[in-house]
Amino acid sequence: MFSSARLDLAFHALADPTRRRIVERLARADHPVMELAREFSISQPAVTKHLDALESAGIIGRRRSGRQRICYLRPKALESSIEWIARCRRFWNQRFDALDTLLAESTSAEG
Image (cartoon, rainbow, N blue to C red; front, side, top):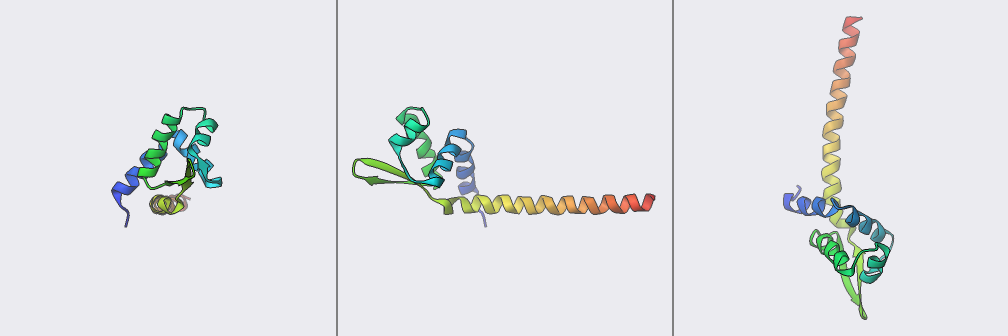
């Protein structure tokens, strides 16, 4: 079963294009916060705000390494979102298949 609150957090976090780009970057490798700030040409506080939203949704984590805060992706956190989307896709595919069948039957009855 899907946790509505968890899905809401994930979709809200992923609604922002900068956050999606951060997730894409972290999917390739872990990055320090300051490096992300340079890569995205936004201030460190702005990056931190985006990271807070992603971390609140459980999509990323942060750990200390010396003086740096390293960000990493938590791909399992996206599984419930992926499952929800797959369930919606199956639902609509079934509906479209039923419509195709109905249209095919209607066309052959006319012919």
